[in-house]
Image 1 (cartoon, rainbow, N blue to C red):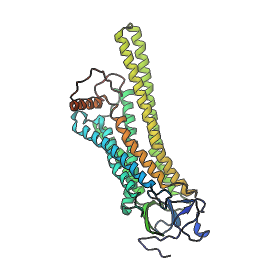
Image 2: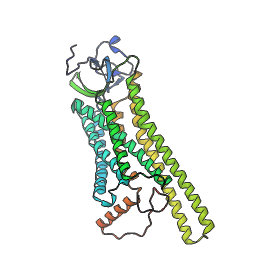
Image 3: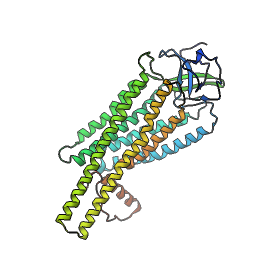
Image 4: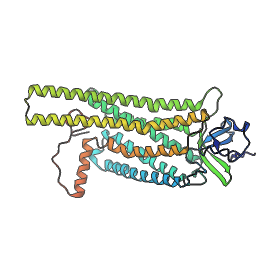
Length: 401
């Protein structure tokens, strides 16, 4: 079998879940190994990384599916989610930019989150479109590298921006006057949350991702894949994943848990102190009773918001790292269970996360809610209500978020 510089022809096109690490030593070349075939794994000779005859995981395409119509359902779901998310994120980004009252350092994190979503959404749509191609990946090697890079980098940028939001809220609530993040520091931290993941993932993704052109019975197909340099003593794939797991998941989520836990403790202490002080100094009157009721409502609302942030973080981001670990271990243990359909499912979850984020991090601000209500009233020519609003991230009534 000849191997050219621009194409690798392979004899065994799919991998059975029962194969060994080196099937070339135990199997004769065929095109149908058994009924148990993973349509997302392919074997090929690798001259670039030094793996010799090894397996490749197709990240965004699978072939010879029993449910060929399923790819149209996948594309439809991805397209609808992208459309809804884009409308929400683009609309709110324009609203923040055109509203002078909201163009301040306190909303930098929120705008950065929405900007990362706007960058991610076209990439997700590209992946969905590629699923429809019978010949696999459509965008070449640079497109493969860039798509993997942008999916991971925007995800990790979001994670660290959400971590900065939790730390900023902690300082605001628990260290009101002692510490303060000014406009320059907020801008510097936001830029750092972008630059560090971009540099780390550029170094990691671009040298180790590539496309493979594979000969099948009905023609050539192309897959987008990742292959780390092989070393007999140093499993680079495990080392890279371990580093990402610690610095992009364990560390941020630990900071978020500590910050939001301290905020909830502070709110409970403040509410208890206010109740004790008011009950001793002021007799029970309709006015004091209403004030206590508003305080309890605010505390419950803030607690629910913080719990929702953490629950959604776990639900949306934990599967990403489970999937990355699964890809690494699946190839190390020769099980070959993972399918590229799981990648599409994870992309759908990330898109849903981009839809939820603006509501969690924008509408918790009294200032944002007030401006949105004003805009809605101007559109529908309604009169303002007399309801009292409180800042959700402070322990006292405030007009600024």
